[in-house]
Length: 198
Image (cartoon, rainbow, N blue to C red; front, side):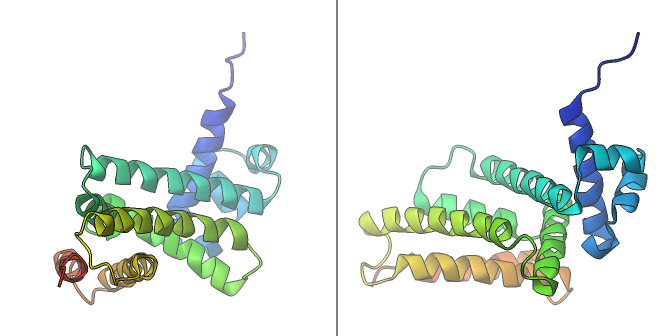
């Protein structure tokens, strides 16, 4: 009697092998053969589940996005006030622990891939930041409506700026220019400025 194969579990095993390689060596090292070795399966099996490397890259990127989403949900918890939600989301993106460092490094590997070949993953790689930026802008708009942010502030631009700043701070933490605590302090400073009503 042959054991029933859990196809979704097999796909997850292979995609997560690619994410581990992306985290430690970059996506340039993630050949189908290297992924097979990392996953402990045959190259044929990788090719069975993912007929192209692009398909594997996209599947793994979606899984990485789901991991970040789950982290955000844990950090938000029961918070409902816009300032706390914005703070939780932006803080959890900063590489201040092992999980966030892994996620940040892996996203950086995808960014490097897109920079080297803009046609690859262009549409898919652009979507998650746009969705997140829109969510942040909505939270800031709610705070503005409640009088917590100056009515003259452009909250769309503020959301974009905060997200760009956190991405830059994350790079500086990974590059050893500042600690995670220093990055969090910079984020808090800018949030204090934004949520100060004249």
